[in-house]
Length: 201
Image 1: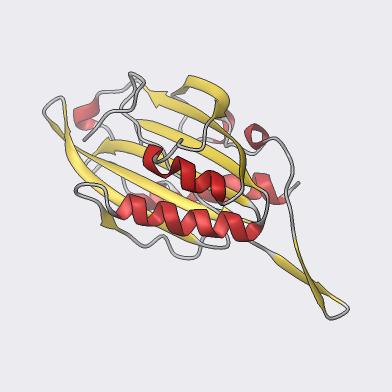
Image 2: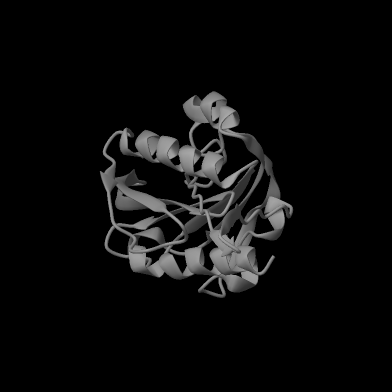
């Protein structure tokens, strides 16, 4: 399992969502223009009280989830993105739930651009070594997720990468933990919370 550039063993995740509204027979796309950092899940929204901020919310570039896709993602209408990383200092070999959580939000000029980026990034995730696509159930306006197994300090580990779209925003959530101790259903509520943060705008 490849570590991130930072010391915490986390990867990144993304997602996009598009909503349309009809009025008088015409269809208009809903656009969310807030700072992406304002939509990210916060420390207080995490499921366990023992998380700390590993890296505070900060801007990231168009390659936040997949460096090789950055040029194409920019052409899809990428505007800006922000990411935050959380960490639990617990015994890895007996841990349950996520040890690391990395959340990101990227804004695009249009819902269609965000949808195109979701498709592009979903394919890039599937192409990762050892990646296995998994179902999240309905999430936002479109979603994709993978799981990757590996070893960390001699312990079997698992990483989940989720991507989903909300209007013209693409979200990602990446979590890592002990194989058997981390389950996808522990992460879906976090994605729902971040989606709720966005739909309040």
